[in-house]
Image (cartoon, rainbow, N blue to C red):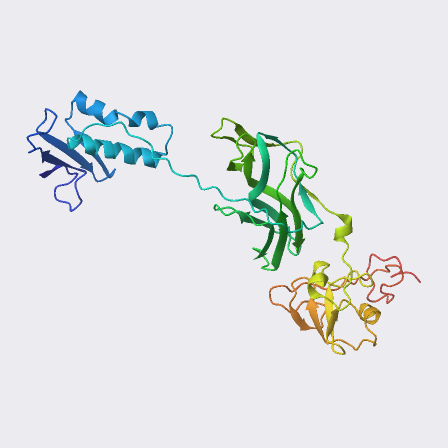
Length: 377
């Protein structure tokens, strides 16, 4: 039986603030000295409360068992356990001490594939590890800058319980200029006492500069019992064997991108490989300010200039009418500006009205007023 308690306005059609319900106990074998239970429901708070229950036996029986488990389970599991105990007590069932159901821990396997580790640029990591036999990255959050528009991009590799494979290729678009960026990374097993202990990950980027790590979690192996665990950086994790696992970063030595000089030198391929040309922005040693990759119709090959073509081909170059933008990689007619409606980048060096070592303007009409030669006789 339910009845309205308080209503703001009897003439209004709004629901009452609270409603009280009475539950009559008809069971003759009910173990407690009460004949009814009253519940109050609040519309505004959306809560249900029990009224007029002043029975110490019910309070003690409900609290048996679960109060010891409060600090060992989550809030959701704790709430479900309390309501389960209340339901058992009010139904007259025997009181038992609650037990936590042991869930099997899902341990992500470490990818120890026997594939070669790429040489090149890498992220240096200074840290102190305790009770850890070996570890490998599980989630890496990177902050990177686009070379074209210098916009900060944040990219997460791994995470969501997925283990990072040894060689990972990530392709995505810049959030501002939508140019395609790429990160080719290599994650390998790190032994804290090993020779390569500071090498967190090897990395090779296209269209990206100033790479840094914002967050990191690893799959680690306990040195005491050889059990695998998921551990976050700068946090401690107790193992079942009693060891306290931790990897603490050296605050005075943040993550640092180490650039290998030998790996940063890109050689001109024999047949004009476009991905290799895009890594240099379409420039070459002959024209360092030109970001255009020309498509030569004589042999349908791609080179940054006619000199590069003649150096690697057995025939002279024919004037190219098509090109590939060295900034975004979109093909179009030969032009000093990219024809893409998104890119529109200037692909040649800026001209000036100054002398510039004798290559500037010599016409006094078009010469800059800042040039002393303009008004000289």
